[in-house]
Image 1: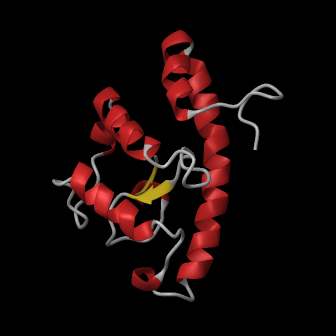
Image 2 (image 1 turned 45 degrees about the vertical axis):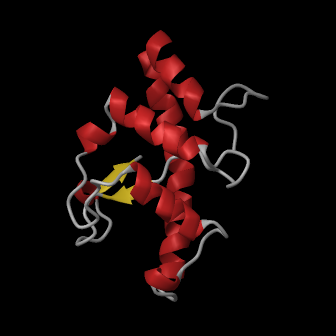
Length: 132
């Protein structure tokens, strides 16, 4: 999926630069990434209807990614509501960017956005969903 002019390859690192130059470009990029994220969410939800989440493996690296996540985000409470403002702050974006860059050349679409339930106790819904 192209996220810019023909032949352009946009990365998460460039998104910050676009925000600095022209904040309106960030919204356009996020909208285009969100289309793919919604498609992936629908696919994953269909899989989750058939396979328990605890048994689902989306990559060969799932366990390694989870261990890395716990190391980099030790205070992340899996049962709490995510603070979207904190996650999307400049510092929050940088921390997540550093985390995901470990998977460049290892996981396809490592830098695309995803749909996140803000609280695991609730289903996907307009008020319970974050694009991250």
